[in-house]
Length: 92
Image (cartoon, rainbow, N blue to C red; front, side, top):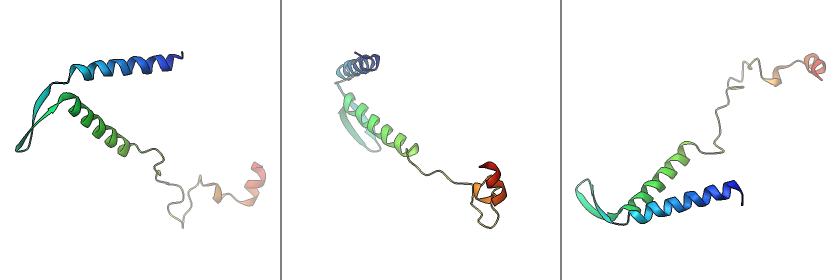
């Protein structure tokens, strides 16, 4: 077995133990209503909300703002399109 697989199994076993220890119902007061829900359910809801918020904040593949070439009239000095033909020949 790989070390990565062993670590995943250990974490899964520990999470299962934590969830099984928190099965008792707890009273939650949300605004003006009272809910009786198990700790495991509330932990899963918080986990899901945290995952969604974390994904939205750090979306992979999100377009970054491109500073080069923002002002089309005055090109950025580091923009490769601003090189003269002579400079391109020298670089190549």
